[in-house]
Length: 104
Image 1 (cartoon, helix red, strand yellow):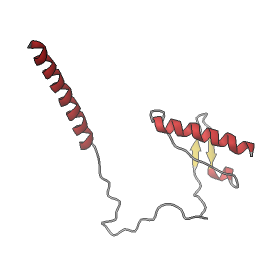
Image 2 (cartoon, one colour; image 1 turned 180 degrees about the vertical axis):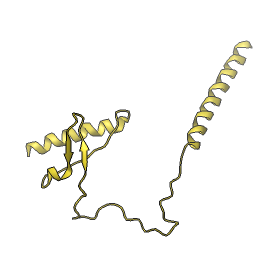
Image 3 (cartoon, helix red, strand yellow; image 1 turned 60 degrees about the horizontal axis):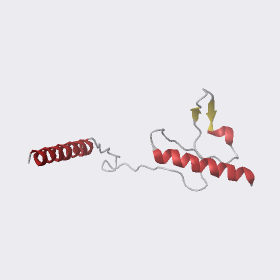
Image 4 (cartoon, helix red, strand yellow; image 1 turned 45 degrees about the horizontal axis):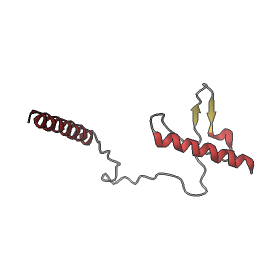
């Protein structure tokens, strides 16, 4: 009998911790006003044929590169984080794609 009480209490505690964790995650969401209600017409993105805006990034070695340095070449820009498993997988796919492009 004591064993069943202990199991029931443990299951209840685990359920409570899981509920509390997921509820805390829901509360952390923030809704950002994009200005649509204020009547602002926000234009985003580029249309086919538009030139991408120039920007600078610092490489891991500290070198500064610009998008304009690669004018006339194909550029794939992939932002990722080491903690994101799907992003790391996508990097591997990009690496295979680059090798395939070099062969052509």
